[in-house]
Amino acid sequence: MNTELHIYNTLSRKKELFEPLNPPFVGMYVCGPTAYGDAHLGHARPAITFDLIFRYLQHLGYKVRYIRNITDVGHLVNDADEGEDKIAKKAKSEQLEPMEVVQYYSDRYHKNMEQLNVKKPSIEPRASGHIIEQIEMIKKILDNGFGYEVNGSLYFDVEKYNKKHHYGKLSGRKIEDLVTNTRELEGQDEKRNSYDFALWKKAQPEHIMRWPSPWSDGFPGWHMECSAMGTKYLGEHFDIHGGGMDLLFPHHESEIAQSVAANGIEPVKYWLHNNMITLNGQKMGKSLGNAVSLEKFFTGENDLLEQAYSPMTIRFFILQAHYRSTLDFSNEALQSAEKGLKKLFKTFETLNKLIPSDHSTVNIKKLNEKCYKALNDDFNSPVLIAHLFDAVRIINSINDKKESVTAEDLELLKNMFKIFILDILGLEEESSKDQNDLSESLINTILRIRQNAKENKDYATSDKIREELTKLNIQIKDTKEGAIWSYDN
RNA sequence: GGUCUCGUGGCCGAGUGGCUAGGCGGUGGUCUGCAAAACCAUUUACAGCGGUUCGAAUCCGCUCGAGACCUCCA
Image (cartoon, rainbow, N blue to C red):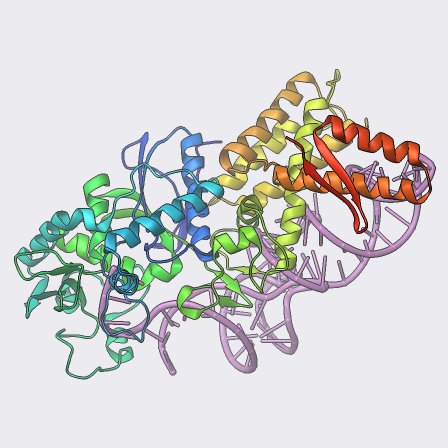
């Protein structure tokens, strides 16, 4: 039962039985963030999706090596910029060493991931730390005749590659379509064909991120880092490669081509892609200017947000949709997720109070099996959550003496909750509110009651309240504007 | 324009040939000093049109609508 995991492979566009290449080991590579800005809701989706997958594979007993890179070289800021490095641009504008920018945003990313309870990957390599590996891989591609050099820059010869292999097999594109669908740019292009892509780019004099190579001082092309680092840590052929659907083409397509060109074998057995998060039906992305940072979600400081949404609300919201569906953001949807999550956690308390009886009126074993069935069907977390809410209803009914379970079933129920909610979905209870906020509003509530008593000339009660608060080192002062209070330390 | 994906009830979101998804909200009830919580019941569905089929939200075709990718760069 637990072993029949099926996952949707973008390569075949079908659900396939998951069979690792070298069980019990599983290698998984996921495209991580570019460290040049704060993480937004769109970044949370792949992180949480592959965290779920990581956690479930581990739960099934696999020894998973999970690689999630940080891209820290050669990103453009947006379309308007002429070939300038995203990180370098930021560095220049803020008078920083590029690595300072990378460090700053990596730290912030890690903090957000921790808040979302996303487990750390096994290895988190950086592109800048693997320049040698990338150069070595480019050399292999050249040796095998799939690259060409122009003025110190190297490009991948897609047409030549496509004669022996299929460029476009992952994204379902045909090279003829690429020809007709790419418009010609002015002569500045060094590439033989518009669909060729850079393996290595010669740095312009103003570029501050540059490394020596046999061809020029420059930087690696976009797709190289994932091919090189994936190969280095997981081997030439590994189990799972993941990322957002937006990376399907050309990034992942080109990764396949590079690996095949260099190593002669298909790099990845299962390709997994999560869908986008939309806002008013449109993809959420930095370049579109509609991306709300995770930090803003947690504090609520954004015009689009009616309130703050906790990291666990965000996590639950994302897990309530299947990872291959688009998920539309709205305040209403997040608020209902918040309530649902609260209900789920409240049930933990009820569960611990339950008293077993000598027979069960509900089939807990079957429910448990259904939960596994949901996850085994391409990590269907929304269906899993639906089953867990069935369990919630059952638990409350037992508490109301309308249903009953044996001690054995109760144990299973407790175990289910722990395994699915805490371990696999990775949800955790959040301390209801900031402690300070809570005590502050508590005191204000008490003072309002005292004010009422005073207005009713019930001075016995109002004095009693002041006395009790004083004992707690909370000093009350009655002023013309009303009572004020402070900690009396 | 090319390629692909999608269109489910007030909102979000599963399902993919016949059997209640689920959450949030609404309504009625049980409980309750009142409320909350909980439980029970209940409400509104499968974009439109046509076809296949004993039977379609689910398959096929068309129409309408929405989105993603398709230059440089990561």
